[in-house]
Image (tube, rainbow, N blue to C red; front, top):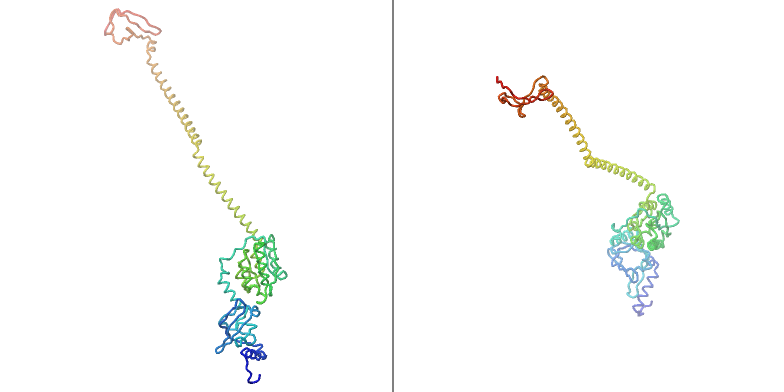
Length: 402
């Protein structure tokens, strides 16, 4: 550009831009700094920010096509390492960084994204314990959201067929890693719920790297799991692997095999429990019956003691005994009286006037009265003399008084 040429502002800015863009050193730069003035332009999806260090700063922009690949959300005061290019924004005559990629400085992007999403969803209450649903005791349909070719589905089939062969296993095959995995997992969970096709869901996959397991750390998967009306068991990776899906699920299993064991009961164990319960119940019923029979016998004995029949029988025995005693007493009394009578008869017989008369004596009577005093008889009186064998009438011709 020759000296003395008058340029418009736009021409000047365009010229400066062309110079900067021709510098290959500025087409791919790596810059370390701290984010400030961060703005998420929700209408366009672009990120605007300032990158600064202790003494300087530079404006920066990350367009939506680039920031869609980020696993974390940039924040103010976050230290980052940026890959991008330097150019000029002609309208303002301001040079700035156009960011193609960004990584947290000192912390892995995936680790940071994990913690950010975990904190966000926890704040919303997605992981609250009171929202967790109880697993059904005897699920007849077990839904599985996983890869149809991985080891996870084989392990789940083996465990369920061994523990609870009555359950129907329903697989909804999905990709478990890659860009399409998270949307497919979300849609599979929603499909199971819309069709009410299962009593419990197992969502997961076998082990892998953090990147391979990342689909289960996506927000859309976590929200689908938390919103599921069907209880969800998360079974992602190995025992040491934790994902956002684990926190959103109703129950976390360390492995797919463990998830299958948690999902269904063990028929052998259940049979043993039932047999044990039956034996306890049988023993309890037998003891109860024995106890009730003993009480019944006691009541029967008490009832028999209080029975009117027993009382009447007792009275009858008492009456019989009284009659027997009375009969014995009467007989004894009669015997005693008979003996006394015989004695009296003997005495009476011994004193009988007839006996005296039989010995030659007589009994004189006057006017029906026995003459016991000679002075009661006078000469000329008519008297009767009773002798043995009869009676004679006499007239007193003489009375001699001794």
